[in-house]
Figure (cartoon, rainbow, N blue to C red):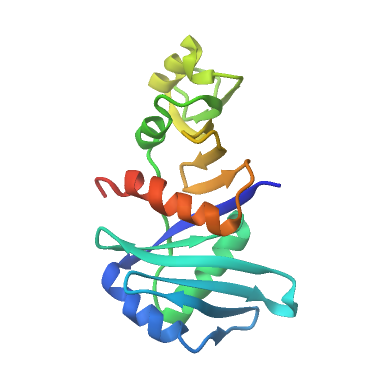
Length: 199
């Protein structure tokens, strides 16, 4: 089964201490219990447990290049709920991180692209185009649409052969066997440095 995560920005890195203090003893809201499972000088790890114990979601907060990032190991809707609760209890603003089409293209350079979704296509009558295949990035059609539109979502193989997808709203899906924690580590170590470049 695929594992997913979503990345948010919580503001300046200096707010990490505030968040640590707020979450240190654990926080319970109407629908979510937030518990820290680890803390270092540069970050926090925790779990968000939903009412009734029906679901537990790992999250990690860390500073990088002066900004504070939150990675939630869940799909878009659940991640949004966890991010909103964390931001709410600490008085912060959780904003989606945008990944430009250019950065997605750079990420895919030299890798095997299996699927790409283009939007804002500058071709009359088309709004969105999806290309899929064994090596989409090697085709002329891919190169043409790369010049005529923006990349919304792409699925590619990384250098270790892991199949993963990334959207322009920094949702990441691993189609290879990775735990939520492994996916968070991969996003933290490989994707955020690329995306944060130039912010």
